[in-house]
Structure formats: C-alpha cells, structure tokens
Length: 414
Image 1 (cartoon, rainbow, N blue to C red):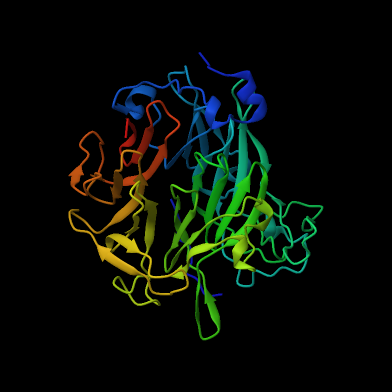
Image 2: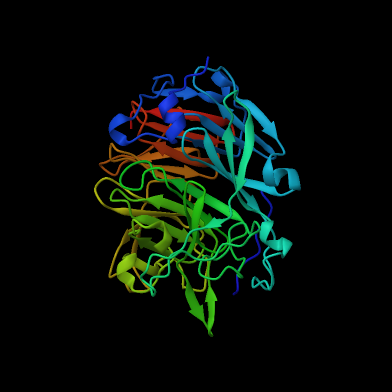
C-alpha cells in the first residue's frame, strides 16, 4: 500500500425511555430543547470555547472535542461539563474528531502512526490498540467516562451464506480489517458522519487513513474504500469527506477518488464486495479528470447531495464541483466547477432540507448556495476558517452547527 503520511492536528432534561433504549424512532422524536433563534453563538451564550470538533447525540446533548478534553453541553445547562485524558487521550494519542451516537454516547477518533507493514502476526501485538476510536458515555450523574475502545468486529461471510460471524480475538484489537483481523490498516480517524434519519438512523460511518468503517452501537464492520491501482499497487487515499444522501446512500471521498454505496441493511456485510448486489455502487472508484489526472491529489473535503438530487464535491485546493455520474463503473466521471465563491480553499459541505448547500471555506467564512444556485456569504457566522458543518434535521426547526476558528454558532430553520 502506498499512502501519504498523516500530519499532526492539531437543569438537565432527560427522557428515561430514551436513555434506556439509546434513542427513539423518527415518529416519536422528542422536540429539541435548545433556543430557537435563527442564529445563536454558542461560544458566547454557553461558554463552549473554540473546540476542534462538535457532535450531537440522540438526546440532543452537544458533544465537544478540544485536544485531550471531551465536553458535553446538556439541555438545561448553561455551560459544558469537561473531562480530560479519557481513553486514548490518556495514553497520549492525539484526538481528531467527535461524532454523536445514541442518547448519552459519543465516539472520539484518534491519530496513530501508520505501520510500514500493517499485517501483524499475533493478536497480542500492542499496535492493534493504538489510535482509532473510543466510545464515551454520560453517567447518570453527568460525568464523561470511557465506555469502550471500539474493538468488536461484526462480519458475515457472504460465501458461506449461513449467517455466521467472523472471529473476534480474546483481547482488544481496536479497529482492524473485518475481512482479515491480522491487518491493522485503519489507525487514524479523520472524519465521521451520523445517519440522522431513515432505515439506518443512528448508525455512524468513520473515515480513516485507509477506508470507511461502519458502526452500529459498539459493533463495527471495516472497511470499504474507493481505490485505484498503479503498477500492481493499490492506492487508498485518506477519507476526509463523508456524507449521507437523501436516499441513505453513503458518499465517500478521499484525497484521490470517490464512491457512492447503497449500504446493505446487514452491518455484517458492509465490507462485502462480491457479489456487488450486496452493496450496490452508484459510483465505484472514480475521479474527475476536469480537476486533475488520477495520480494527482484532489483533496476532497466534502461530498453532499442536495434535495434536487445533484451531487457536489468540495476540494481543499480546487473549489466546488458538481458531479454528474457517467456510469457506475467508469473511473472517470464528469465534473463542472461552480463559480461564485471567493476562494478555492474549501473545508466542508452541508446540504439542508430547504435545498441549500452550505460551503465552509478556509479563509472566507461560511457561504450558502440556495435552491436557485445563488451564492451568498452567511454573515451571522464569525470567523474566517470553517472547521466543521453538522446538520441535524431532527431539531425543531432543523439545526446547522457551524464550527469556525471563532467558535460554535448554530443556524436554525434551513
């Protein structure tokens, strides 16, 4: 495998039934308890600081990540509670992102060095427990504690067709290849997305230095990835861009290529590539020749589908592109670059239910492309660098979390 090295990164409202079951169905979703103004600066009003990542769980707890600190702002409280050195942070690993889970649960990603040879000879190799992902939880009295270092691989063998699951080691192996436990390839978590509605509501997809891992509770299946081949070697880029399409498809984009997968309802088949009917791919492993040649990095940082069915990709260096699918198996798809933004340095995308596409930039703040494809600067958002966009349609009205270098602002009603 040939990949780049990963650089440094840098009064309580509870519903007992929701806590017990870890979430609620869409039809019984509780109204969110947060303020309803169109734009609210949570850094100023709730003293959340300037975190590096933000998440929301099924009980509308807002989770925050800041270095070795994990915070949670609970409904009814005026400021977050913080805990330091929980889980992998206590072992000295650098945190990367946080993602919400069921009520009272979040997932925290970490960075670890890539292995020159990811194939390990023994399940007792300590390399397995480095980096990747922790599950943390809230205790009934509001403390943040480690629930588990994610390690339970859940995988069915599609060739056996008997429903049997793969072997799990007697010790904690962290996230490793579900197809072959010896391969410790997914070691640094770079992105994550929670499924907010539909059949798979509550599941989480995690983008790593190698591929995409799917989680349901504390079980995972790893992995899938868009790839390309050169001189017999597989190139798997770092997955910084993940999205969920309006029909539940998983949108994956890494530094080279992108793909669109319709996930099987069975978590244990997520990594199954054969037969392709198990996880149909609208786009298998593709690139946009209008951006670069295949060997050159496109640096995708956002992949979204708007309500009109159109797909958009955002690059760290090359601006905003509309994707047209030529065919599922074509390596080269078609891209059209969109004008209207003041910069090509993009960091994040979020598609909202009113037909908008919100675009985060590295140096020009937050921009909105409305349903008529008109671009405007969102002036309610302080800061020049957008770190993250998180859309929760379960809010009433919907909530768009915008994290910038100046802190966290929430927009409502899009």
